[in-house]
Image 1 (cartoon, rainbow, N blue to C red):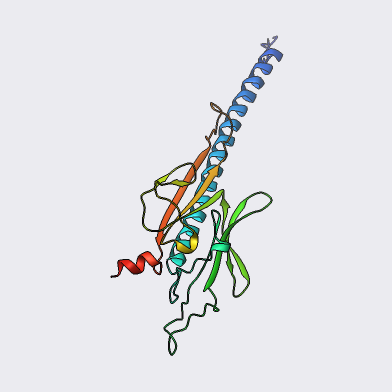
Image 2 (tube, rainbow, N blue to C red):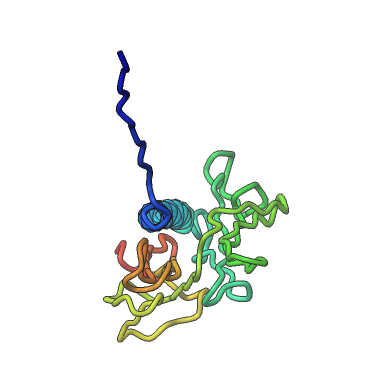
Length: 224
């Protein structure tokens, strides 16, 4: 008796099919990689934005609070004209004027003679605080693009305008100011190109704060 066996054949992918499958896989990987890179770019951009705005908000809050004390315990508004201008301000306050016996007009203690200014580093600009009496310099914010300071005799109406402010009122010299407006600007560059994954347009954010100088001549007049 003779047994008959059935021949079996195993078929695989042809070379053409293999090339097509590899091409489809590579295209899918490229698309996934592009989407993933775009997501990382967007997240990185938002992290930069959040950090920059937090720096700017913190620095403008500190400057506003300390500048409000300018001239405290003195007979002037405390602002030093020679060291103050559009991008820097120096002011004095006698914070200990009434803590000891009798009145004094000394401003020799820490934080009683302060200068704020913007410093341009190799890759960024920072807002720095210089304590003149202790000769220490500290950084308030390191992601700032501009700092603008405007000086007026009294409270004014103003508008924000391209990282600065405008007003119909005439500015005065710093030593005569009773109202100071601070403007800090944060700019983020464009990421990628329009239509591409992860594209983020250029962004500009401006923060402003205005301060009534408590010891200005105008403030004194308003008390009567």
